[in-house]
Image 1 (cartoon, rainbow, N blue to C red):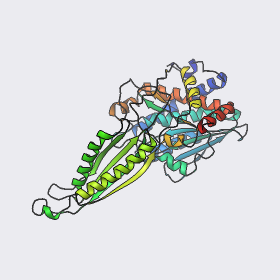
Image 2 (cartoon, rainbow, N blue to C red):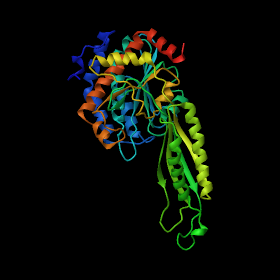
Image 3 (cartoon, rainbow, N blue to C red):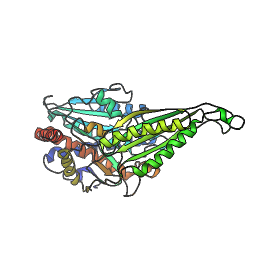
Image 4 (cartoon, rainbow, N blue to C red):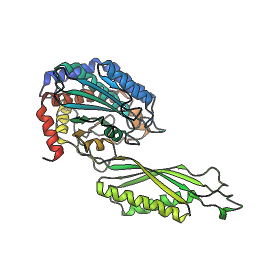
Length: 402
């Protein structure tokens, strides 16, 4: 990548406007990177991103956006809106930002870069808003790692009228295309009866036994699962003392699949495994399914423009790696409107996400440059949609399968 964004000739069309967008990002370099570093240094988990939400809201408000914070029912959701100077009768293009962290790990998924790049793109577009027709919509979206905050925002109609949603993700290998596993969070609770583990064990009903049997059942189930399916979990509570039969045991699990129909069957099977484990341990068992994320309906019209704009900066696209897939509530958005969720590398290939190594990479100068560059690329892609409504129409035709 170049030392500065202004050293690069943007991809056609609209090269003059795209150059000004890049210059606007460059002019706000210090503000954008300070935001990324501040969020990185003060990680907040899903639904608790109060500082990060306030910081991104303040940032876009400084650049002319009318901000709702909170937006909808989630205390940490943000919406900023800025009408184009040529009138509101044009496309509504959404620039998204994520900012939740992983519990106990911090920004091991690099959401600080996603927040800052989204803000950066919004800042750049604000500079050119007087010559746009339509509306720029900035959406600060909480709880991607757990809880599917974007689904709440969809239900709260915060995406209403939006014609395209754009959000980048940091990774170790650049892939403009996106494939996602459908996923759901599951809170499992087994309830038994306490007793003295030595004197009267026969009087107890061991809830931890049920949880152990559930893990065992999952392990055996994996032998018959499709290669793209995933089931994994952790123990949240397993008792209070070794000499007390645990009356309560709790775990948190996730079920995932690339196939939506298979995903629904897996959820039903998981619920049956919970009840089987409870029956075997003479306990009661409950499984609460929350925060569902959908598979990705990637939009090739939007993706192709992102790839073209990315190529001008010397960033090479790679095919989607279907053997290493995760989940995101961007899949939920993609089921409702044209959406892209490209990944751009901030580190060397082979660095695993959701790790301390990736967390540290998200705070490096390399990640900073990607944050700025992608801010310009997202803004340039959005500008094309404002300047050429036929692109928006084509994206919707693809979405609808016309």
